[in-house]
Image 1 (tube, rainbow, N blue to C red):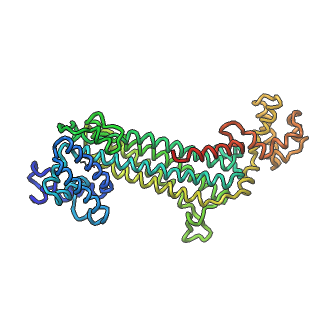
Image 2 (cartoon, helix red, strand yellow):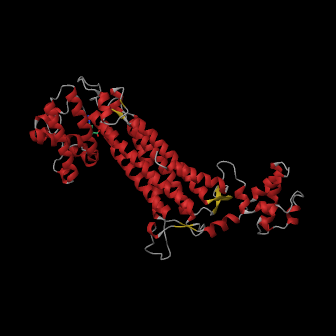
Image 3 (cartoon, rainbow, N blue to C red):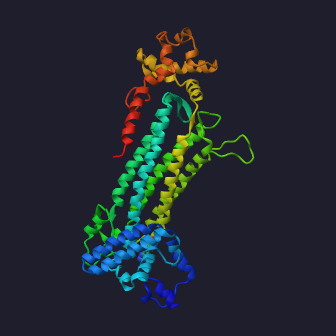
Length: 465
Ligand code: ARG
């Protein structure tokens, strides 16, 4: 029983041992070992600040530093290293390893520090690295969109509203729409990073510390922009986790919409895309099937990340200041969000890099179904007919065309003139697919020159800062 108490970090106040089931329930080491490297980094900085405050002598600090480096090296060398001690969490694990190596000196490192400011510091350090990584992963997916756009620069697809054929657009324009979403996502993550990059250490359990540690120096040493201004807030704040999950949710929402478009366009009914065998699956029963599982999983996993966001919000909403153990629940949500995001971005990039675009099929779809009806209304409007009236006239033309199962440009000049005498033989050029695209020539439109410019600009935006 005494042995069990000694293994905890709070032996003195306790006479009884923890219930084994509770001890297991209380443990976070199964997952928070991912913070191991960050925990050592933060401990090294804390060690230096204790030396600066005169709490540790120069030799002691040197010894502790060497021991921390050794623990790090051992952890990196062998996964078994973590399972040899049944630690409660990563912080108690590192301390136990230090004590093993340097005895009481290892117990000195926790001076002026609590696991409350320690864990908040670790998560921030870890998440900052992950956000930096996610920037390059996002760029890779964006580059895949641009490559796909360039490889299919003359492909036209039907654009939809209400999932009804609306107006033709360049396929590259569609790619660039998703590029814009991911660009906003990158910006958002950079913005979240600012609020992640604040140092809690030095806040101790909740009230701050009485030791003369130089918090600004610790912040600098760990690459933080500043030290948190309020100790109560610093140990109880998980806004940065919520913000990250929120930014990640938006990425996932975008990937999910992209996935949905791809799934839809890869059906026989649409037939614009074919997924590579590398990212599709077959059916165990139906021999003809080629299923877009990759994209379905991305769409599905969006729900999972949204779940982490709402889970974090729900965990935090009722917590009194300052630290509460509820907050240990933040880690699995953040870790899984990071992993899911990375996997989904990577799989999406692979899908895009191997997507076959069926130009003929897409163009046929863009050429049938009255996607040029707006063109005819604009044609009449340019000849002086008020647009509302032009719209009405073209509506009647479309009715007749539907009735006869013909396209607008399959009607004769005389037939068209019977609706408006302003129609002349230049109408057929105006109704062509080329003209329909070319006239959308304002900034942001789908005219080929605008899209080519947008592609070049997108490439520039993707270049590393
Ligand atoms: N494993 C804990 C967590 O993740 C570390 C902080 C523990 N602090 C405490 N006062 N029990 O939140």
